[in-house]
Amino acid sequence: MSEAKTHKITLIPGDGIGPEVTQAVLRILEATGVKFEWERFAAGAEAFEIHGEYIPAALYESIARNRVALKGPVTTPIGGGFKSINVTLRKKFDLFANFRPVRALPGLETKWPGVDLIIVRENTEGEYVGLEHEVVPGVVESIKVISEKGSTRIARFAFEYARKHGRKKIHSIHKANIMKLSDGLFLRCARAVSEEFPDIQYGEHLIDNTCMQLVMNPFQYDTLLLENLYGDIVSDLCAGLVGGLGLVPGANLGTECAIFEAVHGSAPDIAGKNLANPTALLQSAILMLRHLDESTAADKVQKALETIYSERKTLTRDVGGAAGTTQFADAVLSAMG
Image (cartoon, rainbow, N blue to C red; front, side):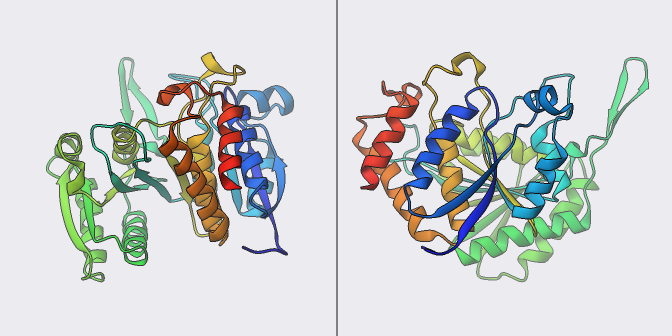
């Protein structure tokens, strides 16, 4: 652990349960001994009320300067309203890799104990480029964009991660039997990159079949490489295998910046009631610690978190316990010693 360096981090607590889980996570991070300086910003509807902008210019500047951000959930309007804050930030900073490790926590009863998957999702292209228009009244066209550059760099990210971390197998997930040009290009790029990594087994599965296979036997997979929309859907499906979105971390990675975030919603129905589970944001913060080369601190928090789940004495209600957000954080802090 670095003793001298202070890490300047852009902090977006979010809305709904965001501020509560963020505060819990900050308490745990501060207890690691790693030095942080937090630059706190609102985003979304709250930011608009204060600044007249959904993403203030100062927030963009902070992320560009610090190059690392920790983000709680921000509500995205459905079917209207402002654009997704998540998608906007990913495009702004070219955070092309959405990285979601999905690993079962000890002590939780799930249908598939021991699941350990890596989801690598292309984060800037596909249907999420936002190119939609009304052709004629009653007919809307949405354009899917797949590029050789984007497909190649996400494939290379997946293979380089797999090699560095001892993962043995990668499946590209696609629908090239129907979308022969777009998904076909994605596959061709993945195949080309795979030839540079003969030590890693490479396979390809159709997206619909993959969803079925994951539910029937997730252990046949190791690392999944997916386009943007498929990755969004499959990463949530995989989260369900280990207990839900409240438990799994997320990272948006680019060559210059990284944003670590909880991938669940803002749950306004339980906001302010000390009921929210901070595990997802805490696990995202652990990824952030590793990104900052603070592996000792990351291991310490991970071990404490797993201890709390193994003991099952201080879990939140969503995973069968009775503890509140602050009580859960207290338990993790106690386990850290």
